[in-house]
Amino acid sequence: MTDKPNIKKPSHAPMSGFPVDGNILTIGGRSLLDVADEVGRTPFFAYDSSLIKSRVGELRAAFPGDIHLHYAIKANPLQGVVDLLAGEVDGLDVASSGELNIALQSGASPNSISFAGPGKTDKELAAAIRAGITINLESGNELDRIAELGARTVGTPKVAVRVNPDFELKASGMKMGGGPKPFGVDAELVPELLGRMAGMAVEFMGFHIFCGSQNLSEAAIYEAQQKTFALAIRLSAEAPRPPRLLNIGGGLGIPYFPGETRLDLGKIGAGLESLLPDARKAMPDAEFVMELGRFLVGEAGIYVSRVIDKKISRGRTYLITDGGLHHQLAASGNFGQVLRKNYPVAIGNRMTSDEMEEVDIVGCLCTPLDRLGDRMLLPRAEVGDLVVLFQSGAYGRSASPERFLGHPSAVEILL
Ligand SMILES: *Cc1c(COP(=O)(O)O)cnc(C)c1O
Image 1 (cartoon, helix red, strand yellow):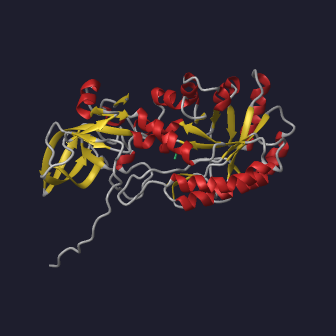
Image 2 (cartoon, rainbow, N blue to C red):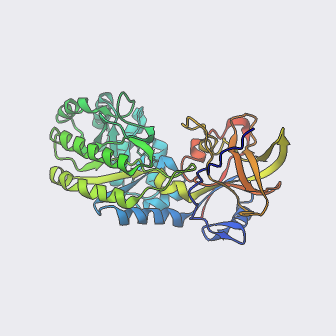
Image 3 (cartoon, rainbow, N blue to C red):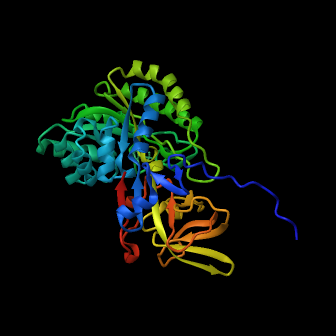
C-alpha cells in the first residue's frame, strides 16, 4: 500500500457575485432562504439582474466604443431577462420565430434584431421580413426562398450572409465553424452568392461570422477575431454594396470547472483595438457587432434544489434532491461534454461548516445520468437543505428536457 501523492486538486473559481451573510448565500442582496420562501417551491432558477448589468458594463469598459454588443437570447430566453438586456445592449439575436416574438415583445428596435439558424421555415422567414429584422443567410437555397417570399410580403428582406469560415476557433467548447458545417455559407462559395444577390430584391446588410462558443483562451479568441476581420475584408470587396454590418460572433466563455479561470476582458479589448483600424478603413459604413449569450447571463444565475433524501450506498453518501437534469442538463454533463465534471456547488443554507463530508449529489430522475455533483467535499448537509448550482444562468431550463419523467417544471425568478 502506498499513500496517495499529495497533489492539490484544482478548485473552482470563486463565485464572487453571491456574498455570504450569516452562513447563508445571498443573491441580489437577499438571503437565499427569503428568495426560496417567496418562490414557494423548489427547484427554481434565480437570476441576479445587477450581475447581468455589471457584466455589460465590464464589456463596455474593456472594448472599443464602436463594438456593439448583442444578446443571443437562446442562452436564456426568459422574457424578463430579455427585457432587461434589451435596455442594456445594442441589439438582440434570435434563432427561431418563438425567440423573435420574445425579442419584439421586449421593445427592442427591429433594426437591431438579427435571426440566424439553419432550417428556417417559410413562415419564420416571412415573419422576419414583415418585422424588418436582418436575416442571417445560411445557404443559397435560403436566399432564393427569401427573395421569393419578399416578392409576396410587405417590405424588402434584409439579409446578412452568415459565413462558414475556412478556419476554426481553437480551444473552443463548441465549434460552429471550419470544415463542413450546417451553419452558414462556406467562405469559398460566398463570392458567387454575393454576385447572385446583386440582381435580387433583397437588401444586403453585411456578414455574420461565428466560429464557436465557450472559449476561455484570450489568445485563441484574438486569433479567431483576426481571421474573422481578414475574411470579412476580403469578402466585402465582392459585396453588392459596402457592408453596413459585421457580426464577428462571440465565443466568450465562463469558468465552469476546477482549474478554469475568468477571461481577461482587457486583453480581448486590446486585441480588438489593434484589429479595428484596418476593418474601419475597409468597411467604413459597417457597424461591428459581438453577439454574446452565455457570457452575459451564465454567471448571474443559480439553480436551487432541495435535499429530499440522504443515504449511504456501499460507502458513498448520496444527497438526493428534487432537481435534476430535466432542468439543468448541462450540469449533469450530458450537454456536449465528453467527460463529466462538476459545476461549482454549495449548500446554500450552510455555506461553511467544521464538519465536511464527501457526497454525491443526484437528481430525482430514475436514470444514472442524473448526476449534479460527483464526490464533492461540502458542509455536512441534511434533508431539507438547499443545494445551489452556480453558473446556471445560461443554457439551463430552456436547454433541458423538462418533460422527461414528468416531474414539475422549475420556477424562474429574476431578482
Ligand atoms: C448560440 C449562439 C450564440 C451565443 O453563444 P454563447 O456561447 O452563448 O455566447 C451566438 N451566436 C450564434 C449564431 C449562436 O448560434
